[in-house]
Length: 448
Image (cartoon, rainbow, N blue to C red):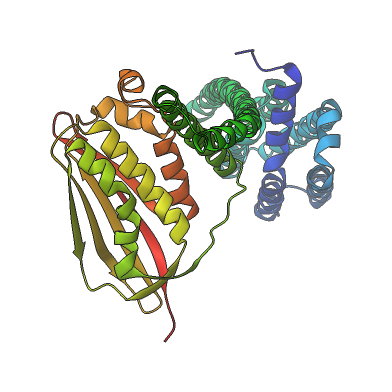
């Protein structure tokens, strides 16, 4: 990570110098007024009034600077940060000299009570300047050192009280300066971390944009190549269909049948790629309509009974809850979701049974939520592989591609279809025991 640039540090320092400047000047006006009020009768009126007016003028000018800084355009502030720092430096130096003069003025008569109160006020002014001015070491010193040195001079005396007062003033100057240095060091580290954070966020945003561009390119590639493949495949399927109607010999028919099956299987995979690319590109929208709930499941599963019987698998159907007779939803997309999950289960299960459960999980006046569960007794999915199944063309076991065929887009399509229909999808699996694919979809109730 590159270190923060001088311009970055300067901009942040100037921003901190002006952030609480108005509040600090209000405190300065209050303290100046209190000192003048308390010193009446002890110090001549003319110098008191002159000093108080000067304090008001300097505080007013600094407040005006803060207002102008906050009202200026951020980009312009950054480009002229050096000028704003110079103004802050002049303002702080002027205030430091003014309060130093005030310390000498209020402590010169020798009134111990007034001296102690003045020292107390000056200490508060310097301590309050640490979080405001310590962002810049030089500016803090130009403000604080004249004030404390003036107190040290004004408190000079030969008796123990004044000697102790002078020693405490010197000690306070050292502590305040060191505290300001610690504050400045902490600020520098904070600015460094802020710069690193900004850099990390920029890198993260760049990586996100790169990933989005790559994803769009991948989606466009899938869509283009799939459409390009579908055209010649339609020709192969059409010609093989025409060829099957000819008077073929047994040997020719034996060759044609696997050709047609292979072409049909390849066409099915191409259609899956086209569907996935359309889903990823956001080109699909739900197409809802009314359907009979009691006939829905049987209609979807009917096409899979022959494949189940061919592998010697049992299909167990179960319906839980009092389902409404008519619902409104995207039945075509529901068929595709169940179809992909059934294809997946039949592909990976060699014996046993496949169960499908339909359950009413939420029943509202205008809407219901149905949960579909498809459970198989296949090999199961290891926990470390479950997190990978959300990707494109990812299968839990790479050897499954060689053993069972397929390109691994079924679950990716299912996830995106469920998301398209505002549903939820989850997988529960135990290696060696089987897998349950569960999804929940909302459906609207049909009107009477």
